[in-house]
Structures are given as C-alpha cells and as structure tokens.
Length: 194
Image 1 (spheres, rainbow, N blue to C red):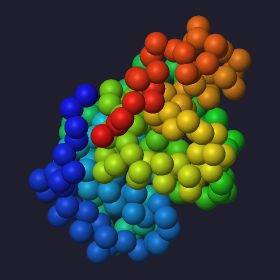
Image 2: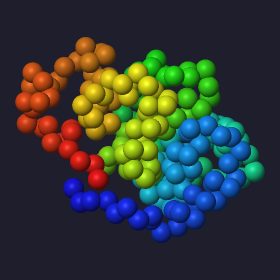
Image 3: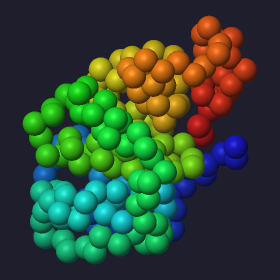
Image 4: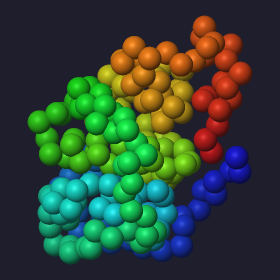
C-alpha cells in the first residue's frame, strides 16, 4: 500500500479550524469528531450520510458538540449507508457497547455507530473514518473502549482486531493458524498502516 502523505488534504484543514471554532463541548472525543467531520465535509473517508448515524442521532451529535452550526446530513462523498452487506452490524455494536468506558453517555453510542459505519469501508479503519492517523484511532478506542485497546497487545490493525474479537466472542474461529505469529496473513494484519 502506498504511503499516505502527512500533509493536510485540500480544504480539510479549513473545515477542521471551522469545527474547532464552533466546538461547544470539550471531551477527548471532540478532537476526533472535528477531524472526522472535516474529512467527511470534503469527501474523504468512507463514512456515509450522517456519519453512519440515524438522522436524529446525527443532529443530536451536532447539537451537543456544535450547537451553533447547521449542517445537512448528506455526505460530500455521496456515500449512502448500506448496512445490508454488514450482517454483523448489531453484534459489533453490542460488542463495543459492552466494553465501553462510558456506556451511559450519548456520545458513546454515537462514536460506536460511527466506528461500525467506518468498518464498511475498504481501507484502514482510521482512513475510512476520516481520521488523520492511526494514532487518532488508537486514542479514540483507548478513551471510549479501554478494555478493547488493552487487549490489542500486538498492535493488530484495528478493523481486523475488532472482527477477530467479535468472532472469538461468538465462538467462531476461522483462522487456521494456531497463532498470529505463524499465519501467512501476518503482514496484512500487523503491517504498517502509513
């Protein structure tokens, strides 16, 4: 995979500064949401309309974090949510929420739904979410789902790790290798994401 340039995408930085200026709620999720929304607004990442949230939840997120901003729920990329090809959606939501640090907070439900929508993408999860680095995603997961972050002891790529954990929680073991260290797909799961 080609290296992702470290420079900001055209327009994304401007949107990011705009979101930062209008931010009303400070939480660790604020920074990641500003980055995701900035990318989403210029058509980067794989998040569909409403960041993958139901319309009422999308507007709830905006009202809580950016109450002075009005924004349509239409993705600049033109992507629509197609969860029909994601039969495990509800299982993944339940898996994440069961390990959430703050399950009582609305923002946890929103972050969970956004993460699950990002799993529909074809790239690394941090890119599909419109985050700017894998460290952004690792921080988001560590804050919202510390139990999951702590379990990723070998720094497996996040999308693969979430699905591996979900399968193991369901008692499904599809990998034929006795351990990741001897698996022929090791570079695909643990290789660089930069």
